[in-house]
Image (cartoon, rainbow, N blue to C red; front, side):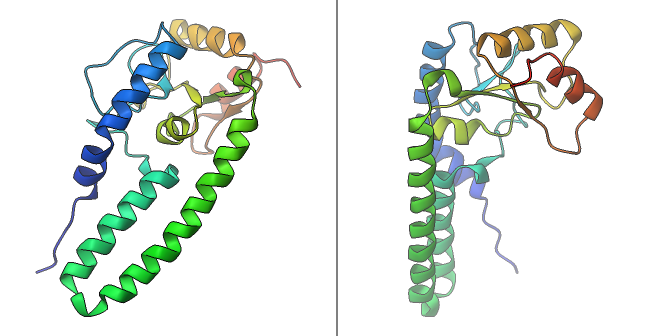
Length: 191
């Protein structure tokens, strides 16, 4: 009897136009970026093949404070419809959470706006920061493509892009191949 709500349909349908706009902006920033037929592309992602996708959507929505607000609003509305006697409680909590997330968004935006354009490109092993990058005018260059390590030819192209962008750091989660991360990091001058 448990009711299940699929946040993905709500989130992805509500951001489709935002992503299309950002994909167009990415094409302006990087004309060599391959286009994709996927309207839900994690548009601020660069890879030599297609942008990183997990199935139809990039699931890393929780890294965007703006998308967290949208999800919280949806959750509040659904919980309120299931338990109308608690509607005020849900709305008060939503208001507090929105205030925190809006403050976080403002703080991140101020910090990212202060960066020179030359520092708004970053290198990641796993391309999970597309929505965050989209929100704050950043571009991620991803090493992985669709969960796979790059071929040597693709890796060389990624490293050329990263060197052209004067990137000196690669962000890697500890569960990914540390040898490949070390190989990539060794390609950049120490700062």
